[in-house]
Structure formats: structure tokens, C-alpha cells
Image: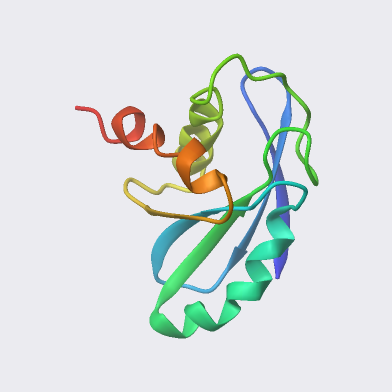
Length: 111
């Protein structure tokens, strides 16, 4: 497991962990958890998947930022994808997260 921290355009930090190599899958952890939760899914890396697990704002290594709506986290994820040079990725979530991050699709894949 490797954990990393990048600085976002607004100066906050975004922590993330990457495990495996292959098709990128952005994994969103559940409430009261962190990027480390992705280790429970490490068996998926045998399927040629690269699991990228960012910490939500205020969790793990990420700086807290109040969210005004459920799509506020999209810009952080898009910045991370650009930073990692990922043009397309799959989405996997646990708990309520899978619903909170559905708005990523139209933002990330627009145009």
C-alpha cells in the first residue's frame, strides 16, 4: 500500500492510496472510514484493476472543507484524475458514498 498527499488548487490536501495495476477504479470509502478501507478489496487487484482510494474532505489525510452540495467533491476527484494522468475511470463506493459520487459522471465525462 502506498499513501500519497497532493495539494489541491485551493491549498487543501487530498490524501489517497493506490493498490494494484490495470484499469483504474476510483473507490469511495464509507462514512467514518478512510482511504485505507480499500485494503479490504485488495483481492480485486488480481483482476487487473488499479484501485485509487481518495480520502473525503476531513477524513484521513485530507483537509476538511464544508460541502455546500453533493457535487462539491467532484473538482477534487477530477484534479486527482488529471494529476494521475487518468482520462477515464470506473467508480466503486461503499455505504452512502456510491450515491454521493454519482454526480462525478456528468462532470468528469462531459464533452
